[in-house]
Length: 151
Ligand SMILES: Cc1cc2nc3c(=O)[nH]c(=O)nc-3n(C[C@H](O)[C@H](O)[C@H](O)COP(=O)(O)O)c2cc1C
Image (cartoon, rainbow, N blue to C red; front, top):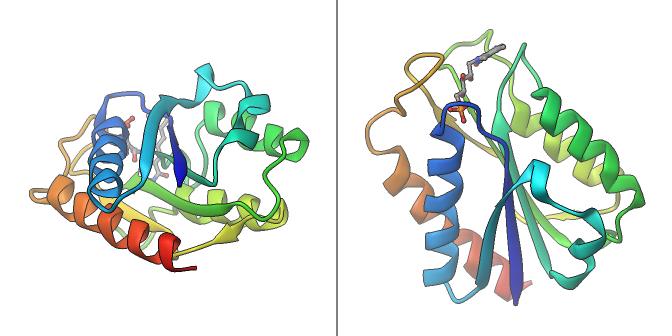
């Protein structure tokens, strides 16, 4: 199974989470590549069985880069592909969640969400990530691979 992890990241925190997730997925037996959203040609998505998308939460929702990227999913051949969304955000009830919005867009485009979206907590605008987050997302990646390979 081939998966692509697509991320946006202003200060590097979401990138760290994306790489941890990808490493866990790889351990779980999936062939994974990890790329920045603004470098992805959506025409290439057809080559993957699973698409993982994550971004930082901006103004309770998507960053501008992720808004632009997720709009392009409409033209991409992503229907029925396995999917998972994640974000980085503050640990607050009022933080909002980019991952939730990404997951909505995935479903609108007919993608099959394997596991509900997950959030990684940042302690400030520029980070750092809450202690243990990379280990946590590596574990999530391994479990995600297991669920994807089983379905
Ligand atoms: C313009 C802007 C708006 C933000 N708005 C929110 C927000 O509404 N909720 C939140 O939890 N974090 C917000 N943040 C903080 C981001 O969650 C944080 O910068 C991000 O998780 C860091 O990830 P990155 O290093 O990958 O960019 C905002 C950050 C920026 C730069």
